[in-house]
Length: 248
Ligand SMILES: Nc1ncnc2c1ncn2[C@@H]1O[C@H](COP(=O)(O)OP(=O)(O)O)[C@@H](O)[C@H]1O
Ligand SMILES: [Mg+2]
Image 1: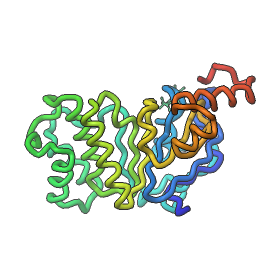
Image 2: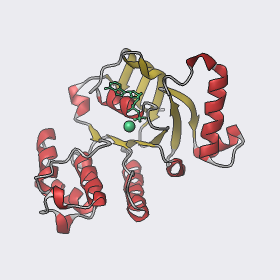
Image 3: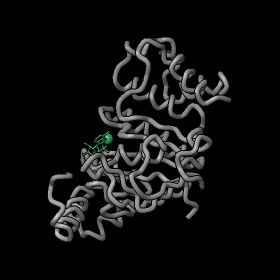
Image 4: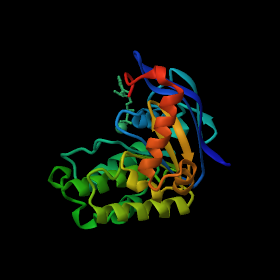
Protein backbone atom coordinates (compact mmCIF):
# COMPACT_ATOMS: atom_id res chain seq x y z
CA UNK A 1 0.00 0.00 0.00
CA UNK A 2 1.16 3.51 -0.85
CA UNK A 3 0.69 4.84 2.68
CA UNK A 4 -0.27 8.49 3.12
CA UNK A 5 -0.63 8.10 6.89
CA UNK A 6 1.24 5.69 9.14
CA UNK A 7 1.14 5.67 12.90
CA UNK A 8 3.28 3.32 14.96
CA UNK A 9 2.38 2.51 18.54
CA UNK A 10 0.91 5.94 18.97
CA UNK A 11 0.10 7.15 22.48
CA UNK A 12 -1.38 10.42 23.66
CA UNK A 13 -2.10 10.82 27.34
CA UNK A 14 -3.75 13.79 29.04
CA UNK A 15 -2.81 13.29 32.70
CA UNK A 16 -4.10 9.81 33.42
CA UNK A 17 -6.50 9.76 30.45
CA UNK A 18 -5.13 7.55 27.70
CA UNK A 19 -6.85 9.30 24.80
CA UNK A 20 -4.76 7.33 22.28
CA UNK A 21 -3.40 4.07 23.56
CA UNK A 22 -1.00 2.21 21.25
CA UNK A 23 -2.63 2.86 17.90
CA UNK A 24 -1.24 1.51 14.61
CA UNK A 25 -2.89 2.91 11.52
CA UNK A 26 -2.10 2.85 7.80
CA UNK A 27 -4.14 4.71 5.24
CA UNK A 28 -3.39 4.51 1.52
CA UNK A 29 -3.65 7.15 -1.18
CA UNK A 30 -7.15 7.81 -2.51
CA UNK A 31 -8.81 5.90 0.31
CA UNK A 32 -11.85 7.07 2.24
CA UNK A 33 -11.08 5.81 5.72
CA UNK A 34 -13.90 6.00 8.24
CA UNK A 35 -12.91 6.42 11.85
CA UNK A 36 -15.87 5.14 13.77
CA UNK A 37 -16.32 5.30 17.51
CA UNK A 38 -18.42 6.71 20.33
CA UNK A 39 -17.89 10.10 21.95
CA UNK A 40 -14.63 10.23 23.86
CA UNK A 41 -13.06 7.31 21.97
CA UNK A 42 -10.14 9.42 20.69
CA UNK A 43 -11.19 10.41 17.15
CA UNK A 44 -10.46 14.13 17.45
CA UNK A 45 -7.22 13.49 19.32
CA UNK A 46 -6.04 11.13 16.59
CA UNK A 47 -6.90 13.64 13.85
CA UNK A 48 -5.06 16.42 15.69
CA UNK A 49 -2.03 14.16 16.14
CA UNK A 50 -2.05 13.46 12.38
CA UNK A 51 -2.03 17.20 11.62
CA UNK A 52 0.93 17.67 13.97
CA UNK A 53 -1.05 20.14 16.12
CA UNK A 54 -0.72 17.74 19.05
CA UNK A 55 2.51 15.99 19.98
CA UNK A 56 2.33 12.30 20.85
CA UNK A 57 3.24 11.09 24.31
CA UNK A 58 4.95 8.17 22.56
CA UNK A 59 5.09 6.56 19.13
CA UNK A 60 5.53 7.87 15.61
CA UNK A 61 3.37 9.50 12.93
CA UNK A 62 4.45 9.67 9.31
CA UNK A 63 2.33 11.66 6.85
CA UNK A 64 3.16 11.78 3.14
CA UNK A 65 6.50 10.21 3.94
CA UNK A 66 7.54 12.78 6.59
CA UNK A 67 7.59 12.47 10.38
CA UNK A 68 5.09 14.93 11.87
CA UNK A 69 5.02 17.77 12.73
CA UNK A 70 6.24 19.03 9.36
CA UNK A 71 5.42 22.45 7.96
CA UNK A 72 5.58 21.38 4.30
CA UNK A 73 3.20 18.49 4.93
CA UNK A 74 0.82 20.67 6.95
CA UNK A 75 0.29 22.73 3.77
CA UNK A 76 -0.91 19.53 2.05
CA UNK A 77 -3.54 18.83 4.71
CA UNK A 78 -7.10 20.12 4.81
CA UNK A 79 -8.71 19.96 8.24
CA UNK A 80 -12.39 20.49 8.95
CA UNK A 81 -12.70 20.76 12.70
CA UNK A 82 -15.59 19.36 14.69
CA UNK A 83 -16.76 22.82 15.80
CA UNK A 84 -17.00 25.56 13.18
CA UNK A 85 -13.73 27.46 12.77
CA UNK A 86 -15.29 30.16 10.60
CA UNK A 87 -15.15 33.89 11.38
CA UNK A 88 -18.77 34.85 12.00
CA UNK A 89 -18.26 38.52 11.07
CA UNK A 90 -16.70 37.76 7.70
CA UNK A 91 -18.57 36.73 4.58
CA UNK A 92 -18.26 33.25 3.11
CA UNK A 93 -15.94 34.51 0.39
CA UNK A 94 -13.78 36.39 2.94
CA UNK A 95 -13.50 33.27 5.11
CA UNK A 96 -12.46 31.07 2.20
CA UNK A 97 -10.07 33.75 0.89
CA UNK A 98 -8.54 34.04 4.38
CA UNK A 99 -7.83 30.29 4.57
CA UNK A 100 -6.47 30.48 1.02
CA UNK A 101 -4.15 33.35 1.94
CA UNK A 102 -2.81 31.43 4.95
CA UNK A 103 -1.90 28.53 2.67
CA UNK A 104 -0.53 30.74 -0.11
CA UNK A 105 -0.47 30.18 -3.84
CA UNK A 106 -4.25 29.88 -4.20
CA UNK A 107 -5.90 31.85 -7.02
CA UNK A 108 -9.02 33.96 -6.66
CA UNK A 109 -10.56 31.66 -9.25
CA UNK A 110 -9.98 28.66 -6.97
CA UNK A 111 -11.75 30.49 -4.12
CA UNK A 112 -14.80 30.96 -6.34
CA UNK A 113 -14.53 27.39 -7.59
CA UNK A 114 -14.76 25.79 -4.11
CA UNK A 115 -17.60 28.12 -3.15
CA UNK A 116 -19.43 26.90 -6.26
CA UNK A 117 -18.54 23.29 -5.43
CA UNK A 118 -20.39 23.54 -2.11
CA UNK A 119 -23.23 25.38 -3.84
CA UNK A 120 -22.86 28.70 -2.00
CA UNK A 121 -22.16 31.05 -4.91
CA UNK A 122 -25.38 33.00 -4.41
CA UNK A 123 -24.56 33.45 -0.69
CA UNK A 124 -20.83 34.17 -1.09
CA UNK A 125 -21.25 37.75 0.17
CA UNK A 126 -23.38 36.82 3.19
CA UNK A 127 -21.91 37.10 6.68
CA UNK A 128 -21.33 33.69 8.22
CA UNK A 129 -23.40 34.57 11.27
CA UNK A 130 -26.48 34.91 9.05
CA UNK A 131 -26.16 31.37 7.63
CA UNK A 132 -28.03 28.18 8.49
CA UNK A 133 -26.13 25.30 10.13
CA UNK A 134 -25.94 23.35 6.87
CA UNK A 135 -24.55 26.38 5.03
CA UNK A 136 -21.89 26.81 7.71
CA UNK A 137 -20.89 23.16 7.31
CA UNK A 138 -20.59 23.67 3.55
CA UNK A 139 -18.56 26.85 4.02
CA UNK A 140 -16.22 24.99 6.44
CA UNK A 141 -15.73 22.29 3.84
CA UNK A 142 -14.90 24.94 1.22
CA UNK A 143 -12.20 26.35 3.56
CA UNK A 144 -10.71 22.88 4.11
CA UNK A 145 -10.61 22.22 0.35
CA UNK A 146 -9.46 25.54 -1.05
CA UNK A 147 -5.73 24.73 -1.23
CA UNK A 148 -6.41 21.37 -2.95
CA UNK A 149 -4.94 19.29 -0.11
CA UNK A 150 -3.67 15.78 -0.73
CA UNK A 151 -5.01 14.68 2.63
CA UNK A 152 -8.37 15.78 3.97
CA UNK A 153 -9.21 15.24 7.64
CA UNK A 154 -12.90 15.71 8.36
CA UNK A 155 -13.95 15.54 11.99
CA UNK A 156 -17.63 14.56 12.12
CA UNK A 157 -18.43 16.63 9.01
CA UNK A 158 -22.01 15.42 8.69
CA UNK A 159 -23.22 15.92 12.27
CA UNK A 160 -26.38 18.02 12.20
CA UNK A 161 -26.50 17.89 8.42
CA UNK A 162 -29.79 16.96 6.76
CA UNK A 163 -29.98 13.76 4.66
CA UNK A 164 -29.98 15.57 1.33
CA UNK A 165 -26.88 17.64 2.13
CA UNK A 166 -25.24 14.55 3.58
CA UNK A 167 -25.68 12.78 0.25
CA UNK A 168 -24.18 15.83 -1.50
CA UNK A 169 -21.19 15.77 0.88
CA UNK A 170 -20.59 12.09 0.24
CA UNK A 171 -20.70 12.71 -3.50
CA UNK A 172 -17.92 15.36 -3.09
CA UNK A 173 -15.91 13.02 -0.90
CA UNK A 174 -16.10 10.22 -3.47
CA UNK A 175 -15.13 12.57 -6.28
CA UNK A 176 -12.11 13.83 -4.33
CA UNK A 177 -10.99 10.27 -3.55
CA UNK A 178 -11.35 9.33 -7.23
CA UNK A 179 -9.04 12.26 -8.02
CA UNK A 180 -6.44 10.85 -5.61
CA UNK A 181 -7.16 12.76 -2.39
CA UNK A 182 -6.95 10.68 0.78
CA UNK A 183 -9.79 11.26 3.25
CA UNK A 184 -10.21 10.45 6.91
CA UNK A 185 -13.77 10.95 8.04
CA UNK A 186 -14.65 10.52 11.67
CA UNK A 187 -18.16 9.71 12.75
CA UNK A 188 -20.14 8.28 15.60
CA UNK A 189 -23.03 7.62 13.18
CA UNK A 190 -22.70 4.00 12.24
CA UNK A 191 -25.05 4.36 9.25
CA UNK A 192 -22.42 6.32 7.31
CA UNK A 193 -19.93 3.50 7.53
CA UNK A 194 -21.06 1.75 4.38
CA UNK A 195 -19.90 4.70 2.29
CA UNK A 196 -16.24 4.39 3.34
CA UNK A 197 -13.66 2.25 1.53
CA UNK A 198 -12.34 1.01 4.85
CA UNK A 199 -13.32 1.45 8.47
CA UNK A 200 -11.49 1.51 11.74
CA UNK A 201 -13.47 0.95 14.92
CA UNK A 202 -11.93 3.07 17.66
CA UNK A 203 -12.65 2.75 21.36
CA UNK A 204 -10.62 4.00 24.32
CA UNK A 205 -7.87 5.13 21.98
CA UNK A 206 -7.40 1.72 20.39
CA UNK A 207 -8.35 0.23 17.05
CA UNK A 208 -10.68 -2.65 17.81
CA UNK A 209 -11.00 -3.87 14.24
CA UNK A 210 -10.47 -2.71 10.68
CA UNK A 211 -11.79 -3.57 7.24
CA UNK A 212 -14.56 -2.90 4.78
CA UNK A 213 -18.09 -2.68 6.15
CA UNK A 214 -18.85 -6.02 4.51
CA UNK A 215 -15.82 -7.77 5.99
CA UNK A 216 -16.44 -6.37 9.48
CA UNK A 217 -19.99 -7.69 9.42
CA UNK A 218 -18.77 -11.05 8.15
CA UNK A 219 -15.91 -11.33 10.67
CA UNK A 220 -18.32 -10.64 13.52
CA UNK A 221 -21.18 -12.58 11.97
CA UNK A 222 -23.54 -9.66 12.59
CA UNK A 223 -26.11 -7.99 10.32
CA UNK A 224 -25.23 -4.30 10.97
CA UNK A 225 -22.17 -2.18 11.56
CA UNK A 226 -23.54 -1.20 14.95
CA UNK A 227 -23.79 -4.86 15.97
CA UNK A 228 -20.30 -5.49 14.58
CA UNK A 229 -18.91 -2.63 16.68
CA UNK A 230 -20.54 -4.02 19.83
CA UNK A 231 -19.19 -7.47 19.04
CA UNK A 232 -15.58 -6.25 18.79
CA UNK A 233 -15.99 -3.97 21.82
CA UNK A 234 -17.25 -6.88 23.94
CA UNK A 235 -14.39 -9.09 22.74
CA UNK A 236 -11.81 -6.46 23.65
CA UNK A 237 -13.43 -5.92 27.04
CA UNK A 238 -13.28 -9.66 27.73
CA UNK A 239 -9.60 -9.76 26.76
CA UNK A 240 -8.67 -6.65 28.80
CA UNK A 241 -11.12 -6.57 31.72
CA UNK A 242 -8.66 -4.65 33.93
CA UNK A 243 -9.03 -1.42 31.93
CA UNK A 244 -12.54 -0.86 33.25
CA UNK A 245 -14.72 2.05 32.25
CA UNK A 246 -12.59 4.83 33.75
CA UNK A 247 -11.25 5.65 30.34
CA UNK A 248 -14.45 5.05 28.32
N1 LIG B 1 -6.99 18.73 25.71
C1 LIG B 1 -7.44 17.72 26.46
N2 LIG B 1 -7.20 17.67 27.78
C2 LIG B 1 -7.64 16.65 28.56
N3 LIG B 1 -8.33 15.59 28.08
C3 LIG B 1 -8.60 15.59 26.78
C4 LIG B 1 -8.18 16.64 25.89
N4 LIG B 1 -8.60 16.33 24.63
C5 LIG B 1 -9.25 15.16 24.73
N5 LIG B 1 -9.26 14.70 26.01
C6 LIG B 1 -9.85 13.43 26.48
O1 LIG B 1 -9.40 12.41 25.61
C7 LIG B 1 -10.44 11.46 25.36
C8 LIG B 1 -10.70 11.39 23.86
O2 LIG B 1 -11.30 12.60 23.44
P1 LIG B 1 -11.58 12.94 21.91
O3 LIG B 1 -10.36 12.65 21.11
O4 LIG B 1 -12.13 14.32 21.85
O5 LIG B 1 -12.71 11.87 21.54
P2 LIG B 1 -13.80 11.87 20.37
O6 LIG B 1 -13.36 12.86 19.35
O7 LIG B 1 -13.79 10.46 19.87
O8 LIG B 1 -15.10 12.21 20.99
C9 LIG B 1 -11.63 11.94 26.18
O9 LIG B 1 -11.61 11.24 27.40
C10 LIG B 1 -11.36 13.41 26.35
O10 LIG B 1 -11.98 13.92 27.51
MG1 LIG C 1 -14.37 14.47 18.55
